[in-house]
Image 1 (cartoon, one colour):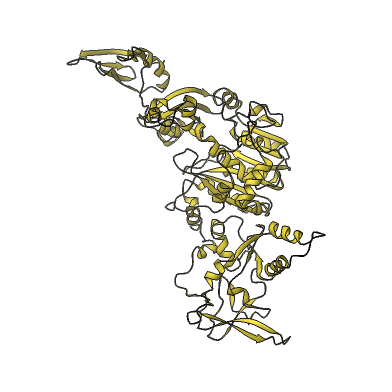
Image 2 (cartoon, one colour; image 1 turned 180 degrees about the horizontal axis):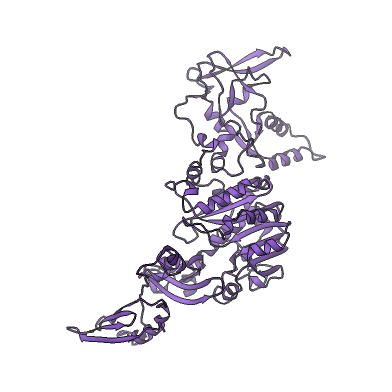
Length: 634
């Protein structure tokens, strides 16, 4: 099967038992050694041939894997093969990249190289476009999953819970040696890829998927009852064909209400077998509500001009295809670490280039980055959502219960009444709203350093001045009554009791206690006061007046959030005279206006940026503390 030629061989007996053989091949050599008492044979094969050795495995197992009878049960046991395939010798970098079995490939690292992995080749197909590999694999220390226990009827004290042989292998899909999907954790991955972006849109009807030939992304899209049409543009029809046979779990829509047994056969789905770039070039698309990119991501220091991350013209075409409030979602590879260099100088340069293209396009208004560590890969996977309408921030920053209700309202349950989603919910979305610190760290290594990076943490050298109404001696502020010069009416004012240098934090504890209220909540409260035939609730009306007077919208435009001061700061007088004001918000207005469409810094420090105040100049003891008009204007 491997096409090798034996030239000569030599065998000799081992003591006390066994045999060793060495064979000289035209292409190199082969050797094996036997341990009869243990029932073990080890075999080493080396070849200089360009032909792969993997096709020889079934024949080797047939010839050398002799079954033996279990002395206790009398049953014949299937032999177990443990093997590793390594590429050796000298190859150029280009030759190594072209070989899917090179030790830098996922296929090598996950399947062919590790001895501790028990693996079975399901199918390997070389198409005109790519090599498709599907394998079953498990590690020796793997134990039965919950599903294994249910399927096999394990009880709570069943000893089989701790026995490896009852653990089911997982199925893995590789494209050109790159790991694309893991069946056991495909829900965690594909729910994280699809649903954050889908729920960032109020009602996605027209969806397009680039790639996704395994069917799992399509499955998640079809869960949304709002969806009327899905166009899936897959470059390789053979992948879809293989998915139907060998990846049935990933393309299974049989439990989705209103769908079909196989997701590809749903009446809402149009399958297009074409290169996505060619499809977009030939079709003037302008009405896609949700566009999801489902493919491999290059992580290399070499240029990959053919990948869509590096094709700004194609990125712009995808953005142009979106409807006015359209959303784009994609996975963007391995999550960074705080040790990573500047993104454009690392193996993540292609991702950085893609983000730069989105930032440069005026039609994109907001970009979110997030990561998920439960996808089954060695490292957390990162994802990106980009929106054409800034109001998608309102959906992105939604509260946990809002997301949970949206899932109930738009997706519902399966035919058997069970929940449709196994991973994504409101709490998961909450964890996506603030990217991990590594994103901020790497972002701030951009040159020049982004403006907001100077505000990643409170200035440890600045002083903090607190207001303590219950302890006047310790309090840095006092409340006084005075006459308004224009109206003659009594008014409250906040005065400094000590000198406060410029940049000092003013009442940070009180400001941190500011409460958040959404536009939707305010609309509901206002509506409740307008119900005819119901007595007016003075308390509610007073509450609304307080919010209107002492609240301000978030500087995160489109978020639909408002912050209401409830401490001593709300008693600070507001002046239209900029010379009189001596207070400013902690982070000044961005030099470019508003906030950047992509900024892990703003995403991570939203609350702090929306509440903290500092002295805009030196404030002397006895001086009134005054806010300027438009303090929180964007």
